[in-house]
Image (cartoon, rainbow, N blue to C red; front, side):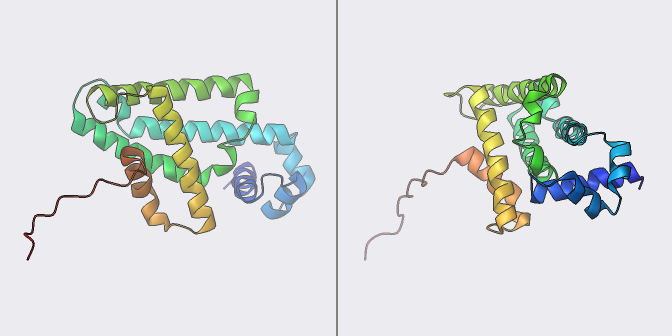
Length: 196
């Protein structure tokens, strides 16, 4: 692993644990001096920009790999459902690796990053709208709202992992189930046994 990659990997780990960590803390954790860190990243903003850029690259890769856009090109509910399950699992994993940037202001403050965010969100929303049309998702709310809900659940899943409230192996399924079913208590089923 190159020194640059080592710094980036360490910086993300450190910032995921403490968003306010200094560059000195990052350098120490990476086992390099401040001068070495600054040779690769002239400022904290430059380091954060690269971490954010990489996270967006990962989310873009996850969206493509999930098959969501291929499913949206058709109208098969099973394809949409499978793609949604895969997408949620990928996003939950992405959130664990890039939790620091999920709500970091750099994502919206930088015009290039903001443009990438909006492009990914537009593609996600197009998939969710397609899932609404074929009956996989409820169609009585805007697709954009469904996108916000998915994002919120992704953050909740990451918090549950961080605090140890839910086993990591259960997070993707819990997130998907909550997304599809909500948190309303299911209606009781009618008893089929006859009274004695």
